[in-house]
Amino acid sequence: MTDPRPVSVDGAHGPVVARTRDELRTARASLTGGDVAVVMTMGALHEGHATLIETARRKAAHVVVTIFLNPLQFGPREDLSRYPRTFDSDMEICRAAGVDLVFAPTPDVIYQDGDPGVRISAGPLGTVLEGQARPGHFDGMLTVVAKLLHLTGADSAYFGQKDAQQLLLIRRMVRDLDFPVDVVSVPTVREPDGLAMSSRNTYLTESDREVALCLSRALQAGAGAAGEGPSAIRRAARAVLVREPLALVDYLVLVHPSTLEDVPEWYRGEALLAVAGRVGTTRLIDNVPLLVGPGGRALEVFSDVDSATT
Image (cartoon, rainbow, N blue to C red; front, side, top):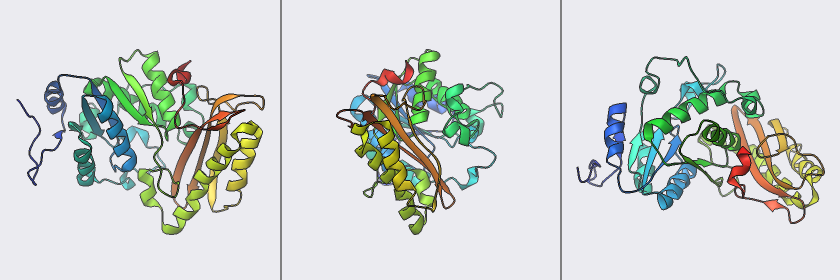
C-alpha cells in the first residue's frame, strides 16, 4: 500500500480514520520510516490542539491523533452528554495540520468488557487540586492514556502545559511503569484576550467570558511579582480574583511542580501558579509555570522536564 490515506470528498488527501482495533493495527503498520508521535484528545479540537499537533509534526515522522471522549474521566455530577462533539471540524483541523492517522473509537472498542475492573491509580498526587474537586478523574485519565499508548505504539506523546496536573501524572506513570515513550509538554495556547484555550470555553456566554478573564489576569499579576517571592505572588494574584465576585474560585495555589505542595516563603526556583474556578455553569482551570526569586518571571514550560518526576 503506497498511500494508505483515503481521498476525501473534495479530492484532497486526508488522514486515515481508524475506528476499531483492527483498523488501527493495519493503519499503524503502514507508518514506517521514522518515529510516531501521538496527540490524545477528547474531540472538540481548537487552536490549542492544532498547536500540539503542529509541534509533533515538526519533530516526528508521523503523527497519530486520538479522538475519544473517555467516560472514565467524568464523575457522577459531570454531564458527559453535554461535552461538545465536533468530529467534522476536528477532521478539518487534523487534515490542515498534516495528521497521518486518526483513531476515533467508541467506548466499547476501548473498554471491550465494559467498565474496566483494573484501572491505573494516580496515587496521592491524584487526590489534590483537580483530584479533590473531581474524585477518580485522574485514575480514569491515566487508564485511558495507558491504553492509548499501548494501542498506538507511539514513540512520543504531546500534552499541553494547561493541564499541568495531568501532565505531571502522565510523566509519573510513564516513569513508574516503564513506558517506552517520551512525554513532551507544549506551552499553553491562549486567546488574544489571554483566556486559555479550552473546549469548555464554548459553554461560556459573552458575559461569562468577560468574568473568566480574571483567571488569566490573576496569573499574570502573580507572574509579575515572581521576583519578590511566594507571598508577593499569591497576594498579587488574589488581589485580582477578589475584584471579580462572579468567579467562584476553587483554589489558587503556588506549588512545587513535582510534588504539588505549597512552596514556603523562602523558596526559590521553579513553581506552578494554578487556579480553578466556576464561571456561570462552567468550571475552568489555568496555570503558569514561574521562576520564583531574583530574575523571577513566567515560563512557557518547566526547564527541566524530569523535575516533575524526581
